[in-house]
Length: 61
Image (cartoon, rainbow, N blue to C red; front, side):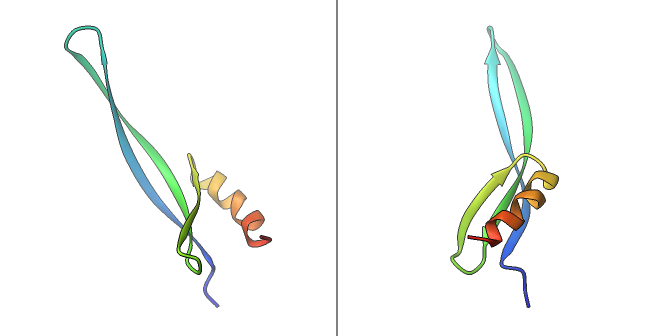
């Protein structure tokens, strides 16, 4: 049987300005937990380990 929760890597980019003309761009890695039955995002985590630890508690719901 297929696991109900899919963990997929994603990243987003944050750009902000400091002072005049100076920009800082930072890439932020994320891991999205997706419920393939309800087709909803059930969690967004900052590391793969955190997403994997949360997945068993999602199975209980």
